[in-house]
Length: 270
Image (cartoon, rainbow, N blue to C red; front, top):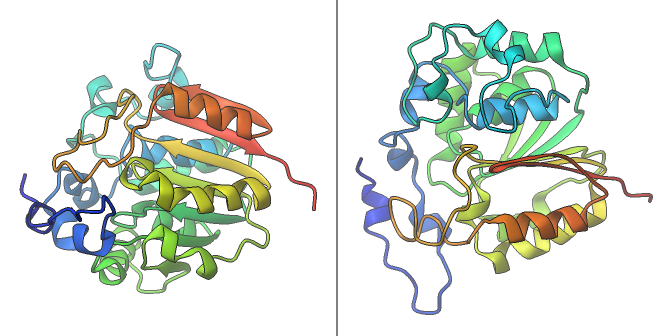
C-alpha cells in the first residue's frame, strides 16, 4: 500500500498535526479500504455494525466476537474471517442488501446524525440515502468530489442530501448544527484526532446530544496505540479500555461495549 501524501508529511515540531496536509482522497483510493468501496459495500467489521447500532440492532457480534446468527441468517455467503479483514469478501452482496437488513431488524430510527471522519463517504451517503439528516466532518483533501463519486457509485444519483464540512474537527465546531441531533458516529476516526483537538467537540457532545454516541473500528482492533498505523502520524491518539471506561462514566448509559465497539447513550434535559 502506498500513501504518497501521508508519507510526504513532515510532523510539526510542536506536536500539532496539519490534518489538511496529511489526508487526501488519492491516498484513500490507494488504501486497503478501497476494494470495499469498489464492491459497493459497507465494511462488515465496523461501518455496517455502526449502522446496525444506530438502528438499535445490537445483535451483530457475540461476546467472543463471533458473528451472530441474526447476521449470518441474512448473509450466509459472508466468510467469518471477512468481518475482521480489510480485504473484500466477494460474497455478491451490496450496500442495498445491508440497507434491507437494517430496515427489517431496526428497533430505532435516527433523525439527525453527525458523522466525524467520513473517509470515502460510504456511511454518510448511505444514511442520507435512507432519508436521514446527515452532517459529516471530513478533513480529507478532495472529499467533496469523492463523496459525490461515492453517492453516484453506490446509489446511481448525483442528488446530495448530506452536508459535508470539509475541515478538521477542531475547526468545524461553529459549522455544526446541533438542533435535534440524536446520533453521533465515529468509524475508524477517533484515533486520528489529537486529544486536544477532540476535547471541545466531546464536551459539546456531552452538553447537547440526546441520543447515541457510536465509536467503532475493526472490532478486534483494540487497543490502538500511537504510531500503530501504516504511517506513524496516522494514529495519533491511544484508544484503550481506560478511555472507554472514562467515556462510559461521562454518559448516561452504555448500550454496548465489545472490543473496539462502543455505543453510549446520552440524555440531556434542556
